[in-house]
Length: 176
Image 1 (cartoon, rainbow, N blue to C red):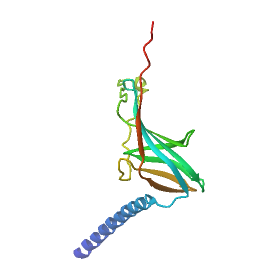
Image 2 (image 1 turned 60 degrees about the horizontal axis):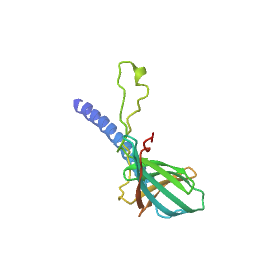
Image 3 (image 1 turned 120 degrees about the vertical axis):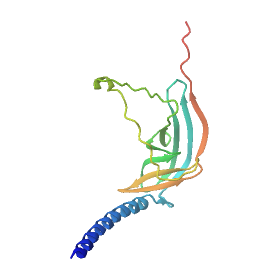
Image 4 (image 1 turned 60 degrees about the vertical axis):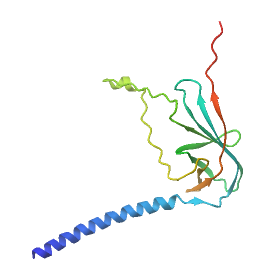
């Protein structure tokens, strides 16, 4: 009788362990299936280039601008975001095409106010989460995330040209 109780307990524990491992493995396969890169797309891209920028002011910020020109967009896909050099940015429509502003951590202001009174800490920003870029990309490669209807797709762009950096100088001194 004791052996039967032990076998029954062991079977119940084994059943629970296998059911949890199945949930985890199905989650990982769904994530991998969702990140399949498209090879044939219904749009045609023109020039895609990036340009580093930095502020001339101390703690004024820096980053990378990525410019994407679209020659044709037959199915009117919606461009969502871009993964480039370990960063992720939202795509916005500009005058000459699409534009992404990726901010880097170089030359950023990191001042925070620490106080016993929470009202004094009101202006503090939350720390940024690390960008989890789910793709392994080279220095001149990026992945474009776009949607058709309710379906999300990914398209890899190779040979992103890099133009000379934009260095925004500080304001000239006042001549008195």
